[in-house]
Image (cartoon, rainbow, N blue to C red):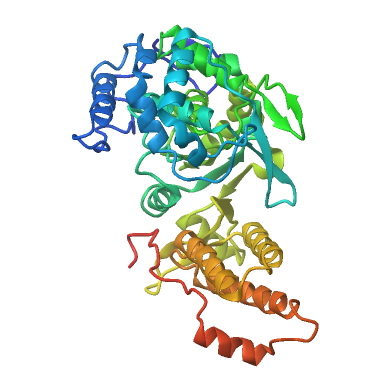
Length: 476
């Protein structure tokens, strides 16, 4: 469906109209996808054929996806579940499910194609957020994870040809660092003077099921596949023995949830930005999105403020709401830094993907976008590390030490980026202090002085940051 004339402005469109069908050459479309499947595996060859068909027939809807959910794909999906320990409401682990795998898959396949398969409720688990609150995770039963993995593999081949290049979250070969590099390119090399930082309130909990299914019908006409997705969405959650129905939302933690969330925001935000917002801007405009976190960059203030005004209404048409305390429009970039210096002021900063972005200067005196771990993320992750250490003091020291080092390595792999050395070093020091205090609690008298503790660290080192991830390729 081509955009209606009345929609060719920055005013939001109705939920049923995504801004039209796929353009012949859409702006910033992913384009020729890298090869992600090996040629030797029959399942991978089949998935590659789906990708080729989706690429060659951009307007065509798939009417026989359900037939791909066969024994071969289900076995492939099981092998790709990994060895995760978390179990769903049935308490069956991936390992124990595999003990009678052939019989289980035979029964599952029969249930799927008879239409008698119904996903079980997800087990609700809570994890801490940066604001002191908790975020709900929904952990599906192992068999439901398997079905979700198989269906997600098929849908991914279709939607990787739909998604735009500025979408980075939960997509093959893309990650947070790629999204951060994209922002760096736009701010450092393009005409960017204004930033709109926005946050969707409770995005995963407020996805409207009917709107999502209408979006899926843009490329899928197979009613059996759509009915299966509807059942997944309506499976509910289980907490303390009580089942709660899910009339809206898709639980975080589900294997297929990130893909469905990307589909939702592709039509609700990305397609609208590419086909309506950017085409009606007076200057340059860019969007960078990672899952439900996104930043829009503009050359002119008028474009930025028009987008911010239209954004609330646009998302509202898809039953989404902006979080006002986390949404702002600010002057940012090399010219903003120059003008602020002339007035003796500081340039505003913004947070994205756990980093505070700020305007800095390179050694040669040129403008340079810089990063530091956001204060909220720093405090939260350090608190979680302290709590973990205290709750695992029963472990032998060597085992505790090795586990802490693995956690440090994971932190460094993400946060050890350009210009963020001080935050990374401070987090390592905070972890060392947490270990020192915790170890002294294991006995009635102090087992370590601060000096002796550091001698111990010299002998049994704590992990240190390794290679720096360069987010600003223009600066070595």
